[in-house]
Length: 57
Image 1: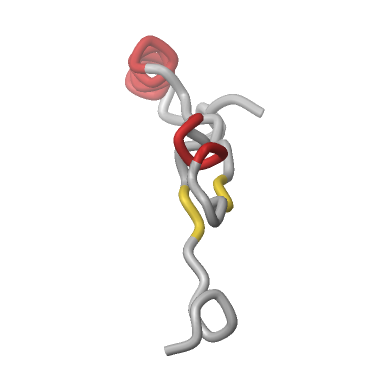
Image 2 (image 1 turned 180 degrees about the vertical axis):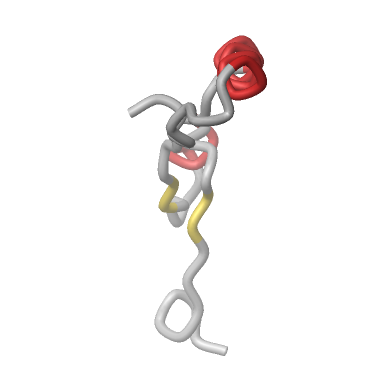
């Protein structure tokens, strides 16, 4: 296989190591809700089932 021509690898945690490796590893940062945000959302949905099903922006 031709790497990186035919094969690509992308990380999903945006760690510093990805920038230090050679060749560099492409990596993305994903903003995930915290446990506290999820707990608050679940509490709102339980209290009011009509709560919109979106967490964060």
